[in-house]
Image 1 (cartoon, one colour):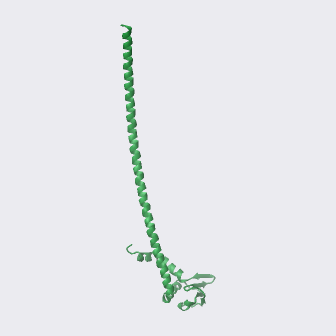
Image 2 (cartoon, one colour):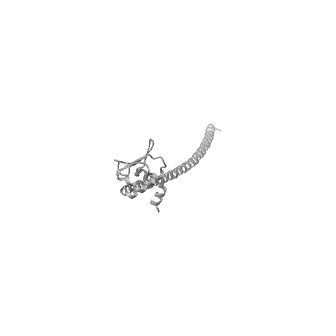
Image 3 (cartoon, rainbow, N blue to C red):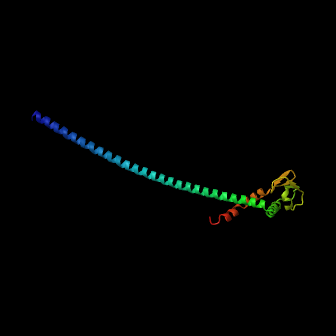
Length: 180
């Protein structure tokens, strides 16, 4: 065998081994690429699912917030309407002597014995049926103070009406907002 044949044979064996090494390296690289693609796909899917869940949660929260805001607006409107009714009631009572007498009677029916004297607006003097001294005072219409020892009880009509309204707020609101 000649030297050229040996060199050719060594070259062919080297080329064969190089081709096998290259093929093996390419196969390993392809496998790694495929593995990375699978992992990327899995992670992408997990990320997408997480994103969708977060979006759904955000949408739910926004819906709840909007409902809360809507409920708050409705409640605010109802409270304003209720306050308006109470204000109108106070004005109507102050403008009507018979109603003032009824509210005074109610207020003093809730106060037990022990009233020593009463200071009341001059215009309301004849509206009270009390056994204690009643003193006319230079105060606005509907103002009334009952004295029990050192204690002063403000029995003024706006305060009594506010107390009645507060005690019956549920019933008033129920009547006011029927069908709402």
